[in-house]
Length: 162
Image 1 (cartoon, rainbow, N blue to C red):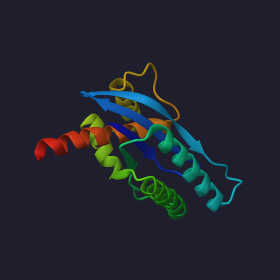
Image 2: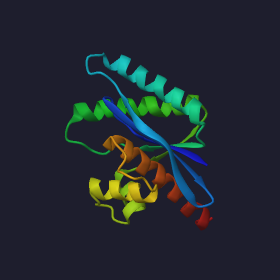
Image 3: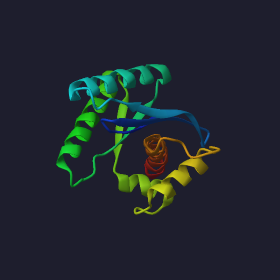
Image 4: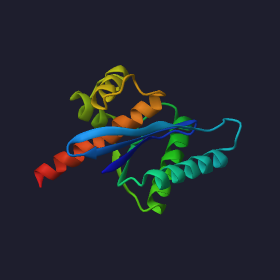
């Protein structure tokens, strides 16, 4: 099974592809879609959609796991991230890929067993679980890989409970 994890953002959208096979997880690719602040918001969102479409076509993931928007005190930022999330969900749906959404708390618990783990702890677990020589960069890509790992682990737990 191939899972694409996505950490949404307008300036930077992190992505990561992992493959789970026979209880082993391996990283296929990770990176970030970056958009220029000099562009209009609609242009930035179109760019995110176009690049996501290309990535989905290239890797044919079985599912896409996206981080849910968490409350932020900056409403302007929250709206822009929400718009990016909407474009991500729409792009995945148009490509026929199922989408799962996870809160930051769920991702932290799935990787560390502790819902208040900090960013360094999450990055360390991503590095260890994927057997990377160094922590994936940028941070948005490491977060996207964490979301993908959360999805694989959550899917396994759901299968056991059925």
